[in-house]
Image (tube, rainbow, N blue to C red):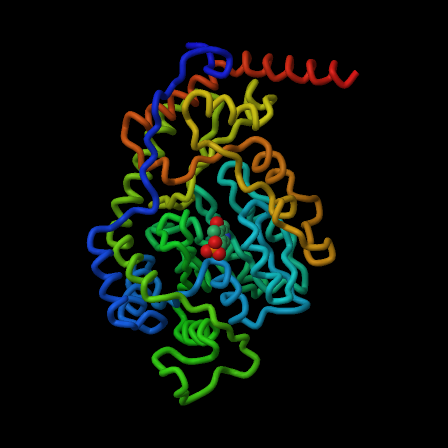
Length: 419
Ligand SMILES: *Cc1c(COP(=O)(O)O)cnc(C)c1O
């Protein structure tokens, strides 16, 4: 195998062509102009209604409530069940901080639990061990290129009477045992932020099969108004104590998303094909591609994760592995989010959250220090580029010992300058 480009060899990929993101759908521009001219820009328009129904149906849920982003969807999903001060909500340590912050916004306490090595999603055993009399809900996250074991988590939650909120910010189009993710727990929460698999700049949606919950979610995002009521004309107010906000999204976002939804199956199909194409070429190497969900029938993708915890690569600092991949021309590789309670943006005092007893060693070691991700957008590349990415990884694996020696010589050098 050729020498690593980082150590002077030729690059594995000459010019990686990442598709432009977000996609511009044909027909969307005309809809946006029409909405503009209609002056009907805010809530309750035909696109919002249609998109909420279409997105819910695509995920096998009965109801969808469209909102401003994928953080307030989590907040409303918890708030609708009355979760607040004094309550604990169990979340995985490895996720975007929003999963935990939504809990904090309601005055409740997030409790971080460990993830599984293969899927990088919440460990059902760690979840069960962290339950206390104060626990009211659990938020499994379908992270990157996997799905949390929602059956196991639901079964444990049922024994303890806990609400299950699926964080599907990475889960668009995913199927578990043939059922859409987001329709399996009590409420499913999705984000349509610019980087997500369906992207409208900003946006989010809650899915549920419970009509009463759907009606309350609608009131929560629309300062108490029910679905269909005209602003200023209210037949009945919101239930007493239900927290209500302005978390509305606009008709423009809904129109953009309706177009993307029509293309979603093809996009997810392409991502599945390309992820499998990379994984097949990594067979027999020491690099572990994130395992799909245990009962996944169609995997959703926000990113594809590669874990380097075997052989010589297990000794190389992740930052150097990423540098080596960039040198090969695989520019889109980067670190994971890391564990939430060590994230640079996470500034809660220790009294406002709890880490499960025994800590989160898998998330700390695998998630933070040993795993790199490539955003889903890279999975939309053509066959040549997909093979180029695989080639860069295979080359990294074949040169693991050389890279480790390079890492050790760098540390010795650093050590000698300190002396
Ligand atoms: C993006 C994301 C969110 C929050 O969504 P926003 O629309 O950015 O507020 C929540 N959870 C996870 C796992 C995410 O990746």
